[in-house]
Length: 244
Image 1: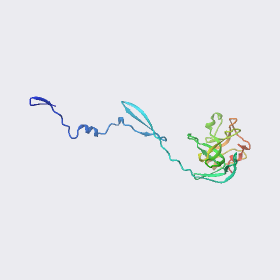
Image 2: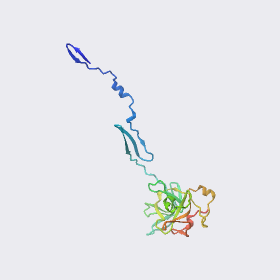
Image 3: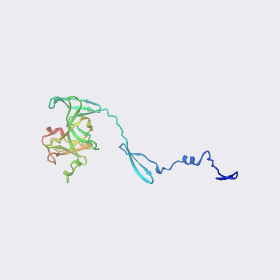
Image 4: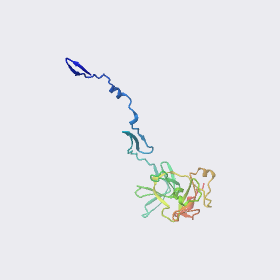
């Protein structure tokens, strides 16, 4: 504002009120149009959010490294068997207890499958520890899921929960795994009409997580209905249902 003062014109400085409109604007809630909302992705340590700058949406990913504390494994050996191995210093066992669960030879178990969501399934056929006892090992005879051999099942009817036990002349029949890779027991019932197989009850059949009665011959890459007396040098009866 300009005022005349003693024959001249001067500009009057405006006085700012104690609580100016600038302060009032700052005190109002800000618009949320440019606000970044952080939403974590389930099951991951990456957080994705969008920001709006100059009318353009941009997607930003922040990765957080989360260190997990090592899990304590509760373990104790069970019944001993003989010693073996190339130097005869490998101690073999018949059973063990892992995280409060008792396991024994020819139990069917779930085994970690790397980063895959579905674990492997197999029967324990050997248990041992190294001489230094720094590692504990199991050998399992694997079952395969239909999805793993889908090309061989064209036109073949299968149960929704059916597995195929590996057999044949091939080194891939069994796998060696750290004993700690076991994640739990798996209830697999054999429904084969083979005379060597104790037939399951109706209750056992209904409670089964999986069933099997056929085999996947790894060497010949085909499905077979019958096997000889041994699989991988082990009496086939150990792969059938256990007697009561």
